[in-house]
Structure formats: structure tokens, C-alpha cells
Image 1 (cartoon, helix red, strand yellow):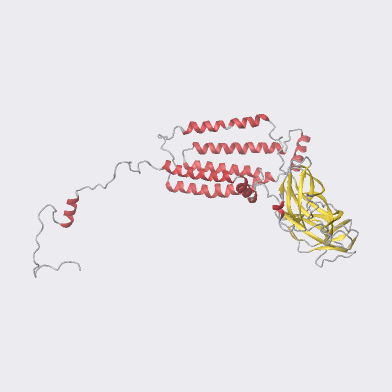
Image 2 (cartoon, helix red, strand yellow):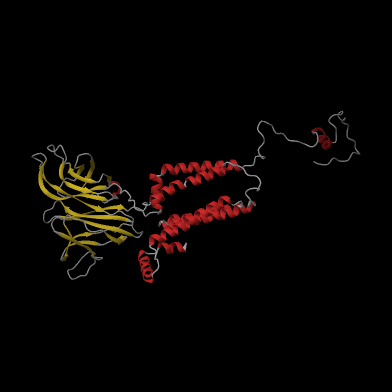
Length: 483
């Protein structure tokens, strides 16, 4: 196990240094890929050898020990794939608990020899197993013979998009319609409400096809029977996008003449959000600036009092973020974060204080700062936070659980049924035939003497003769024993 962790932690820089040393000395220096291939071939070959010996060895204890060696090799292969949790489960559960139980039962029952050496049942099983084993070499040969297995690129997943309403001078709730430029596909995100993104936003993402989409919003007015176009966005495969409505490009009067009001038609933009796996005790922070009164904003740490002076040295999280743009993603330790949005170059002018905010653990948080009631001068700043869980790390318990109970739930249940059937079949096959009575022949108890003789010996009288006569008891008869 220690050697496995040393291999996992063996950095690419170390391999480069070793390679440069080998080049200067004049001998071949392997690369990291060469070391991985050699190690995989060695461990894989040892695993196959242990599996074959487990099947061929007649001694049950030695067969179980070979199986433990096979489990250890499989755990090492999991470590090479950076799946430490699976390797730990393989060692602790299979090689530890189950195989120790097997060995204990085998040695307790004294069943070290699985066969008598002369009797061999199921003679057809060995040719079948050999045929199936050698048939597996065909796809392996085809894969290796192609030679470009490592060069194949994985197909990126379809993009996910989420709509965020940060336009304070627009209607409080609207529907966002995404239509591809060729008109082939259309997606509608219903009831996008102003600032209502402070809950877990993972369920707000929808899957779309990569490409360019025209964005339109619904307006509650009889004159607008179709969604009103506000712009277009571009989404690419493999990314997660936030489509943000903010600001106002123009004003529009809606409603009846007595109750007419002016709304600002929002501007639309989009930015990608990183939801890749992250360390256990860290989180991501992104800021989107939709506050129009200032051209840019700066996010700093104001301290416990949430006040900042011009001469005070403070930690800066986001520096001079322009209006209508998103900041670069910041990776911070999870926990409480004190923040204050200030004017760049004039940090004692605190525009908004970000209170009761925590950097989420293994998640991504996006803070949208906008204007309450419009984009005019003197409006009050407000903020909304959207938190989305990052994708779990490969090989972690969360990743395994999500894959088993979402994508592979049907195969998982089928394997469970097959294992149950195999266990029942193994019990039936291994049951001894001479213990079961032959069908169709009733069984009865056999005795060494006739039943009449047994009763006669116990009572002292023969059942075949005359019955004994009963006489009156006499005074000189001995007292009968018992109560």
C-alpha cells in the first residue's frame, strides 16, 4: 500500500528531472506514461496469475490465499486510477473481512482438500471456462492492435444552462425562452424570479444542445403576445452557463393608461461556471457585477466591524470588476466570509456589505450584486447568491453512489439477483446426495427386535398368552414401591 501511494504521489516534475538525469548520463530514461504502463502490466499479470492459481489449487486454504492476492492487485489498480476509496473498500471488505471469514470456516471444518483426487464432477465445466477465457483475448487483441486507444477524445457532455434575474427595473417574474438560431430547438425556463437564486441551484439547470441561442423574455402586456427578444448567447459542450438578465437597454411603458408603468428591457449575457471536482475543505466563489451606478466594484474583507477606511490595508477578493461581467473563479477555504463591495480607489465608500455568507464546502457560489428598484443613480444595492454542488471526485463515495443509483441502477439490481441465484445454486450443488432420501420410497424406522418382544421384556408378560388373573392383596405382601 505504501508503494502504491508513493506511485500516486510521484509527480510529473520528478519524472522530468529523472529523465533529464538519464539523458545526461546517456541511458534510456522512462517517462511517466512508460512507468504507468509497466506497472499496470506487472500488477495485472500478477492478478491474472493469482486468479488462475486460485482455480487450479486443490487445497482450499491456499486457494483462498491466492484470492486475497488477487484482491490486493485489484486494489492497487484502483489506486493507479486515483480511486483511493474503492481501493480501501477492496482491502477492508473483501481481502479483510470476507476472506478472513472464508479461511476461518475452511480451517475450522478441516476442509483443506476440496476434492478426493480421483473423483472429478462437472467434467464439462473446464472446457467451457477455458473457451470463455480465451474468447476474451479477442477484444483485447483488437483494442491493442488498433494502437490509438489513448488518442481517442471523450465526447464532452451537453451544456447545462440556468437563467438568473438580476434586472431590478424589469418585471418581478418572467419566462426566459431560448431558441436556436436555425429555429430547430426551443427551451423555456419558466418563472424566473428577481433575486430568487439563494437556494441550491443545481435543479435549475437544464440541458441544451451546443450552439447559439436567441434569448427572449415574456412581458405581462396584451400587446406582446410573443416573447420579447433581448439578445443572444453562445453555449459550448462540456460547460455550465449562467444566463443573466441585468440592467436596461431601453424603457417600455406597459399596462392600462390608468395603471401604466415603465419597465426597463434587460440586457442578457452569459458566463461559464466551473463545477468540476474540488478539494474536501474548499469552495469556489464567483461575483457578477450588475450594479449600474458604478463602472466597476471591488470586493474586500472589511473585518469584524464591516467598515473600511481609506488608510486600512484589507484583503482583496475581487479587484475592479467591470459592470456586466463576471469575475474569475476564486478557490477559498470553506466557512464564513466577510465581504464588502467598495468603489475602486475609494475603499472607504462601502456600497454593499455581504453579511452571513459562507463559502460552500465542495460547491460553487455565485454572488450577483444588482440595483434594487432600477439602474438609476442613488438606488440601493442588493445581492443574491446561487450555490451549486460541484461534481464529486472520481472514485469517491458520492460519485459511486450517484452512478449506481442513477445511471446503473438496473444493472446493479440485475447483478444482485444473479448473485442470489448463484448462491442458491452453489448450496444445491454442494449438498451431499446420500443425505437426501430417494424420491418415491417411504422411509420408516427399523428395529432390531419385534415390537411384541420389546413390550414383553418391559412388562414381564407375554402379549400372546392369557391375561394374568387379578388376586386380592394379602397382609404379608410387601408394600408396593412408589406413591
